[in-house]
Amino acid sequence: MLCRVADPAPVVLLEPTPPANHLAATPEQARALPRYPLDLMRCNACGLVQLGDVVDRKELFSDYRYATGAVPALVRHFGQLADDVIERLGLPAGAKVTEIGSNDGTLLSFFARRGMKVLGVDPAVPLAAEAERRGVPTEVALFDDEVADGIVARQGHSDVVLAANVIAHVRDVDAVIRGIARLLGPTGTAVVEVAHVLPMAVDGVFEFIYHEHTAYYSLHVLRDAFARHGLDVVDVQQIDTQGGSLRVWARRDGQPDNAVTELLAVEREAGVEDGSFLDGFGDRVRRVADRLYDVVAGLRAQGKVIGGYGASARAVTLLGQSRIGPFLEWIVDDNPRKVGLFTPGDGIEVVDRGRLDERKADYVVVFAWNYAESVRRNASAFVAGGGHLILPFPDLVVD
Image (cartoon, rainbow, N blue to C red; front, side, top):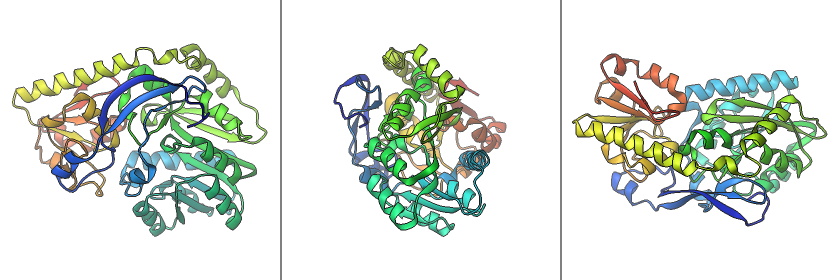
């Protein structure tokens, strides 16, 4: 929720899926998981694109298995983000940096190494424990304004508040941004990364829609949300993560620079303000899903062995909409927390990369397509041995 006005209009109604990170111990358990509606809506009042039904946050995140440190490309991205923040803001040793949704502490560790006082906030107990082991103090909690008040009472205001790919996971966004505003000192800066809804809609990249992502943001919506709590968006960068994301910089009493003005104009021209940019999105979703089904089903009919790469939340959405799960033998993943488990819904076994190196498949569907270059490097032996990669996005390609 953002504006608290219940005026949603349907955008696309996807097939119900289980929570996308609820990998199970057996295929039977995976297939028996409850499925929840996955309907995308747009609020006619504030313009926020959001899910119509929300699964309880504690159910989704208490045993969350997505570990930032298991994705080398994301580790590099966060290292560059830390350098950017430190250089741009001139942060000295001793500066206070707080991260919301800090996962296993990967991002904060870059600040800690530079002598800064860091604190993470994350509801996932195993990931918080991993962060503590690497020297990143972490409070186990779902962040909101009350949690922010507690942090300020114990250790004062923060110079920087980070939220990388987390506010999309939040139902009460207003409480989170209010909390960010309370955490920041008078001259503090919030740095927020979030998937950008415009390229998602234009390119039909629907597999970023899953139950953890309750909302999908434009710069217009973010600007208005921060403004309600006295924070001005002063800069924005368009970055490549998650198929196209925004990095927004916000603080009190700031003036927007040219990048903010220009992107707002691009969104306005595309129809973000009136919602027309979403016209035809449902048709694009169906075309992508059907084409992937046709390719994979055709290969399977030829007797080809097919695997997958990346047992991500996105994979569960793509599997659910394209119906290719029964054709896959296994899915490779680089996160050891997932290996040996089974994907929610389809019950596909998650295996380590050795299975790929052994050339146990003819084709592999790359669910982690947004890390395509890293996947290609990791799969070089597979490809050299005659294997082929199927990349579903941005256009379906068979390498």
